[in-house]
Image (cartoon, rainbow, N blue to C red; front, side, top):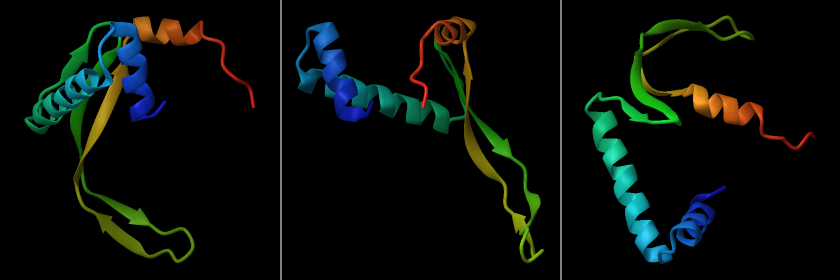
Length: 97
């Protein structure tokens, strides 16, 4: 599902225009950016938690050349699913490839 499909699906379910849903979704995403940027955790009940974690610097070795490189510390987004989401995903049939 991409951004357009998400907006169309929400508009249909909520009985709102696509423009209203777009504004709502953009405001939600902006709020996520602000909160995560401040180092806060975002918890959505029955879905999961989003948080920013700091990965420490580490030494990386290129397997072909054996050249060692220092990878600087960085911030990464972490998501932990709720047990409710986990259970729903277990019961959902998936397309086998």
